[in-house]
Image 1: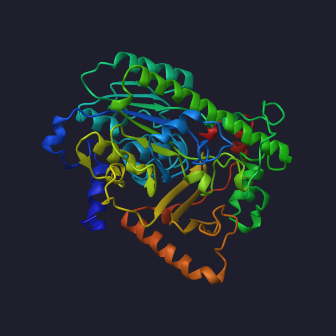
Image 2: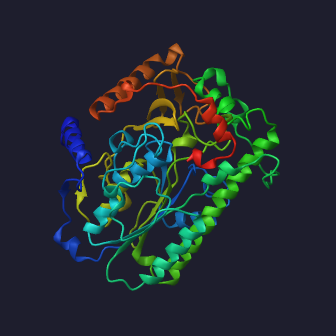
Image 3: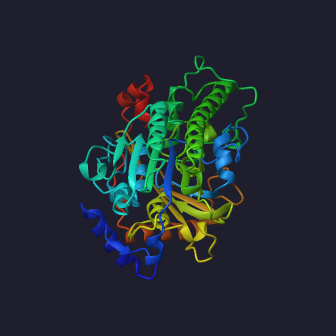
Length: 469
């Protein structure tokens, strides 16, 4: 950006601290304003990693996502700001990292709160859109964040979300206003219901990855082992290989359920003649470990299966690239959708990817992506990540470091943080990360790690799947 990063930080802080709409920094041109904007359909799963799509990994059965991807720009390097539901969704809907949205953890958990910032719903309303959000919200009850939706149903279950979405399309087929509908599904988050020996699974074609076979817990921060032995991984940590394979199939089933739902919505869109006038986005809030690294669900780790998410964007009538290596972060959602809507731009931590989507060559590129993690429930284990195309560096407040050479070790098997031959790149990445945190007022170094509450962990293990959200 042409302004200094300090100026950007100051203006961003002002926007975040305000209870009104963020400051407008530009407006659509007169000619653009004369065109009726396209509708927007935003499809979001919960806990789906980027490989959990059939066109990426044929293990998964996702015909509707595959077909949508064929007509979309697929972002091969899309990331969440943090692998937790509430904070990631706060970034997705406001354009700011969790330390600015003040939702560093899930709502009602340590470091979590209620989102008190206006969302993209209000911004699209101001641009003349009819807005709707159906499905998982998980951002609390503050009226500032909850405003902005002409229609909402902020809960599940998923069949009800689809029903609401189809009903909305029925009623707005001939609308003289553009609409933006956000369908926020729960699956494959229901992986938390997997019960070894009880859940119906088919494991004949299931394979476990290199990182499962080669996992060395002694080479990584000890919270990984603690998560598996005394927290949500306890039910499977010492299980046989078939049990682990069962987890993968159960996860695959949940991904398929999400795919079935969006298939129904997309077909309705086509049946109503809205397909060629509707931008369609398909994404997720964060990933799932899916047995990789002998880990399950999500927790205090920043592997690719946690941070990389699906993202495809279809714009009718535009010759867009079929796929891109552009490093997207979900704070880009707000500026990109506002740009596509011809709405006023606002200052956020993200940037619009519309130049790329429209095949232009002036898209601003990122040199690196930063990821944040705070904790689960009351178990606080802050982590910061900096990732380039070649390297990933993870810094924990108390549990050490990780360094992975992604070009040579894409499965993140070998932690090189203590390897003296790579001390130079580790120092370089640490300095860039520190600079980013200083310029963005990230309070990482003020956080305190807490011990695992074994009583709380025991309650979670008794089957309260919502605790995994």
